[in-house]
Length: 190
Image (cartoon, rainbow, N blue to C red; front, side):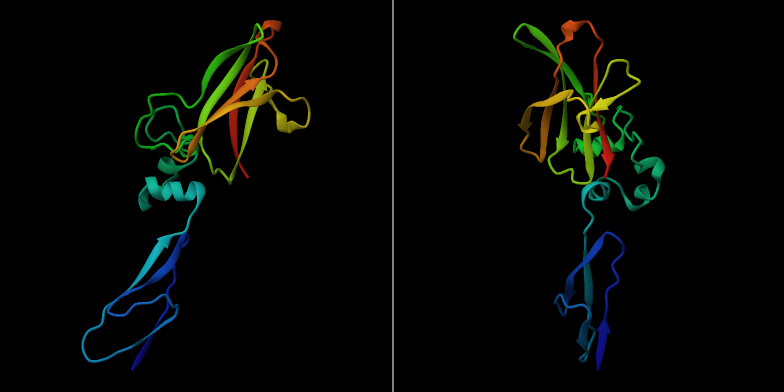
């Protein structure tokens, strides 16, 4: 007697193989029964990538189903970093981070002071576009990608050897001209 076993993985899971008294990775799997009990188990792996994989790594099934806990804009650990920024920085959304996501500094070059913004991000953020934006009034923001002027440049990067890098972006105009200047980083889902 023969039995046909077929898998039906849920979203974000993939079939990995059969284990137990009989094994293999065929799907469907045809099992020929013999005298006695037979145990066969279907094994699945998470196939989600990017933000969705990060959610699987940090939240239970129940938490992932509740946008008030695992949504993009929720600050689960109340440290000032919403879940999207916790993902970008590869940090734990349930453990308070002592440092802010962005850090600001001034660098001196040829007698002029320039504003610098730095942040740590996953090296593989394929599903997000990153924009370093400039403003003189914190109401209107512009980035290099707007097609107009070039406001910032990647000044330096540091490989943290943990799947993240710290990026340093410099404002191209010096602070000495008396104009107010602000920088921020914005992440947008592609």
